[in-house]
Image (spheres, rainbow, N blue to C red):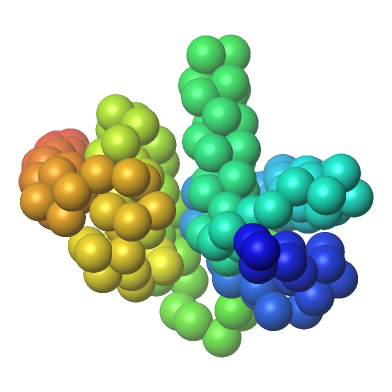
Length: 170
């Protein structure tokens, strides 16, 4: 007999903060983050009410949220909508120095320009602090492939950050 999928209420209690942390690390505004959060748990509720079994509910929620966040970012990029600087005004951790938020915003924006796999690995590794083994499990790839994507992403972001820092001194 397959394991019973936990109810949406149980999943919200257990994994809501993690799901929001993932979404917030990938989208520029709290409104977008809340929409994706609500939609993620609505999708879980629909699957639960239809009797579908979700074998790895935490991973399912995280991946569903991550996919929606990347989809939204791609949509914004296609429409050439600039990323809003709402992080300083709406981020829950108001106690950190503002320069930290500016740097984080720059890194998030650069990560959004990476190829999807690299962006996913970068976010999972740096914003969720997952191991490469955990990332590989969630992305259904080998640990070596996850590690390679993470390396390429980090190398690209470091290169772009160096370029941006040089531009600001000109």
